[in-house]
Amino acid sequence: FIIAQKCDSQGCFLPDGALPPSCMQVLPDDWSPYCNWLEFELAKFLFKHVEMPASQIDTLLKIWATSLIELGGNPLFSNHTDLYHVIDSMSVGAVKWENFKITYKCKCKDGQNMDEQDELIKLAGLGGQDGQDEPDAPWMFDVYDIWYQDLHQVIHNPLRCTNIKDEMDFIPYQEFNVTNEERHWEDFMSGDWAWEEVDKIISINLLTARATLVPIILGSDKTTVSVATRQMDYYPLYLSIGNVCNTTHHAHCDAVVLIGFLAMMKICRENINTPAFHKFKKQLFRSLLACILCSLHAAVTVPETVLFSDQYYCHIIYSFTAYIADYEEQVLLLCIMHGWCLKCLAHWTDLDQDALWHCHEHTELIIEELDLWTLWDKYGIDGTIVVCASGNLHFFW
Image (cartoon, rainbow, N blue to C red):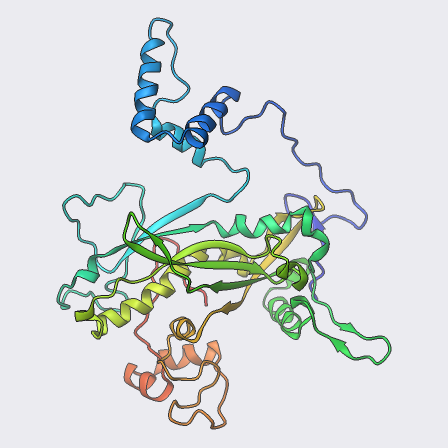
């Protein structure tokens, strides 16, 4: 049974009754990442109050630098890039937004230059196909700019938030009516799933027995967000954790957080029915999720140490619990054919028949042993979908 035992910042467990470890106090004159108060005020004035364009910031700083030559001084920022870099490095408040780019094929066009720091993921060639025999189509060279937040920081924020610390459950529990012994289900951690999940986690790694289970709940909203400057559509991806009580979820107390924007493909009518287009549509959706969630991969099996709102540290281990979506998105997530059941192995022509439930082990086995046509015809599984791997990105569903 997971007991959520307290520890210090190094992960060493503390005895019962031990005081919380001392936390580093921020000095009143600490303006990090700014060097001093003047840098902070100038950045706030130019970026927030005046909203000065980058070219005008460069002109102002150039005039400032010229005026300081005789004195041997330098302006607070060298140019707008320097200013934006310091602003982007601020860690107080909202979690920083990050991005990567994804495409089917890479083709450098005139006027389309990628920044050196941009990470470009190519999906053509996954699954043993190099894509060289496919006729080129405009959609193959579209580049999707994906924005997301570091999930570690997003999840850590509610764990150390003092406003909802009394509205969170850190160990599974069962609640009964004392008069008639009737069981009550209300919050996520009171359900059978949490009990079964911790038993499974501990059976795999006994070192997790003193950790805190943090169930990850994802959901996406088909409400389209348009970005006029890039002619690109997105729809938002949200995250919550199962530790938060339902009443707090309903009160919208920062329990549900926007973590990213999933790109929507640009539809090309002449190519909409081609196999390559259908395959890329599925690969794009799953690859976006895999890239956004990959930072949590290690802590799914090995606990990490996190500061909680009571100023104690605890080991936590993540578990991907649920994805709230409509049927179309669930089909993409499971890589099954449209019209097949999401839960069982019943054939699409007879969905009322008794059938076994889907499970990861069975799916992985038949994908390894059966040919693509049998997977498609007998089980409704698209075995051609392979999620991207870039650097240390791994698919962990």
